[in-house]
Image (cartoon, rainbow, N blue to C red):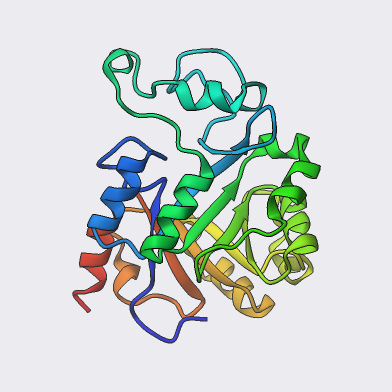
Length: 242
């Protein structure tokens, strides 16, 4: 639980309000803006290599109707990313997770690694990925899928895990989610009921979709240990007004 009014700020897919999400430019911009950590999404290529990309489908940023997990690593690294009218001229590429990890270690930036739904079909690959993995201090795994957090705890119990809350979460039984150390929630869950459930279960929490205008940023609940935002500069500025 937090004992300080300053709460660490994680840049959501990097500083994604200022640069294309989940790219090195977004991560470097987050560092420039003073983010305390980076939130990113990982999936596995067809061969099982970790790649940083949000959507299961490639249509939104690549323009092809294909799953990330159906492409080779060589293919994924070659795709240009961007909106349809900009993609042809784009220099943005998907980063390999290993490259981002090396960069984060250099800058001692914690990572919030969200495990995406496509990994449900490669749970053996997730276990193999976790073996021997070394992350920057303060890093953790998050997912909407509790079974993926169970795999993390099975192979690497020392790493923090966070369940991303949905309507399916049984708040009165939050303590029963043994494989989840913490809870990540959309800011609309910043209400006494959910905060108290975290306190009762002994689980800290982080909130996402924060934009720097929320009144609670200057007087955060003691269960809160992190903000996740597209605007790390704005959230840090608001907190520093305290």
